[in-house]
Each structure stands twice: as structure tokens, then as C-alpha cells.
Length: 153
Image 1 (cartoon, helix red, strand yellow):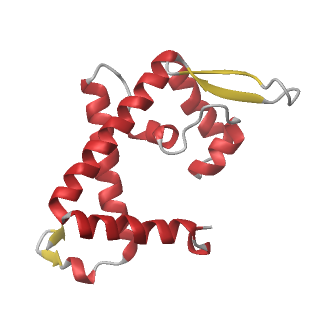
Image 2 (image 1 turned 45 degrees about the vertical axis):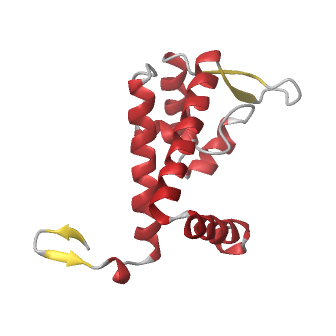
Image 3 (image 1 turned 90 degrees about the horizontal axis):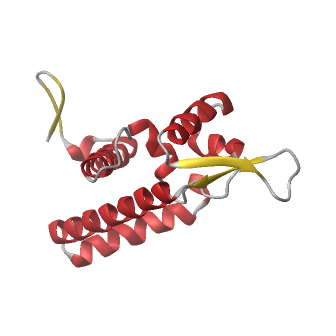
């Protein structure tokens, strides 16, 4: 049972799919940021997760990243600028697209992304232990089916 408002308990069986997916996803993102910060990848915040989530920004144009994250190009460029100032990525001219720019991880960015993957693997092991291997495998299978379906396009 989860309490969303004071004196208003909500049974998880009554929750809609959006909350059932969002709450664990946000917990995962908070954990990744916390562990990245603890590992010395400082100043990263939840906002940066728009760029650190699969498949990552390496070699991608800012406009594509903005579309993936569901934000304006201007907001994405501010986010990219912040990560550029922190030394996690660099923007450069695309070698085959004229004036187009692409985003590349720096050495520090690649290290942070690798650490995020490591944290995700730890989370998967913990969830597998909590749910049991069979149920965890089924959860991933079902989410994979949703991922590949037209439901998320």
C-alpha cells in the first residue's frame, strides 16, 4: 500500500500502469544519480538522466536527443551546455552532414555512462533477488514485448 496524500492510502492493485512504471523508473534514476555523484561524477542531477538513459547521446544530433527526451531543442541545448561545462560531453560538427552538430561523450562521459550501466546491473541483481529469478525474467520479458509493440510508438 502506498500513501499518496495524507490519510489517502492507495492499494497498488488499484494503481494505473503509468504510476506502476513511473515510480520504479524514477527510483532507478535517483539511485543512478546518487551513485554517480558518490563515485565522483559530481554535479549530475535528475535532469541529466534525459541524456544518460539508453541508448545514450554519443554520436547523435541535439535535435534527435530533444525529440527522444520530449523537450524543446532550446531546453536540450541548455542541458547539453551544462554537461559540456562539467566535462561529460562535447559537441562538434558532423563529418557528413554539413552544418549539423553531433554530441560525443568525453572520456569522463564514457566513464560516467559505464558507471550508470554498472549501477543498473546491480539494480537488476537486487530486483531478481527480490522477485525471484522466474518472476524477474517474466517481468523483463513482458516489458520487452511492450517495448517492441506499437503501444510505445
